[in-house]
Image (cartoon, helix red, strand yellow):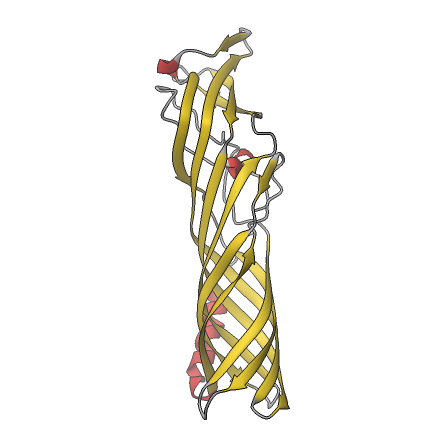
Length: 263
């Protein structure tokens, strides 16, 4: 799902033009995060994510306001194969133009992912005073989530790349100069291609007056993305085929094995 961010940016600029009536804020947001996927045979850890944020809230009435801003977010997690010694197959073409099945088997494969993104929120806020100097706040809205980079670092104790040529019923498992064979203590890096998506966002919080022009805001939040941030045209082997070496494979990542996956 691709989304034209110019509509949100245009609306943000309109609100900024009314900034004299806005309440400005800066802050930090952190919590348990997970980059969810529906790639079969893959599991992921849950880790701490967070964001630095700045923005403003324009009051429409005493209780209702509309807010926007910008956030820089980072999410980290580790991804594994459900079966530590699983074999995954992808179709490749060698240097002569012949197609073959490329079978990759790894031992204890682990993938560390770091996703950084710009988030542009747009939300409605309901505010109600519940005690002297204390307001209750509820916010609901959307965010445009634009990945800046999505980097991966992969490692495995062993890697085995085997080719099968169905036209001649031929297996090749030990021809390193053509990219087939074994490797120990593999380490590699790569990056996923990405695109922007929309997220929903909800907050329940309290504002504590700290002075005439300042306050402390604390809240619980839930953000959830829709669609996929993966932008890939074809399925790829999670460790790429190198036609000239069996020990210099680029890390494409486990999510690259399914171009239709929702990440």
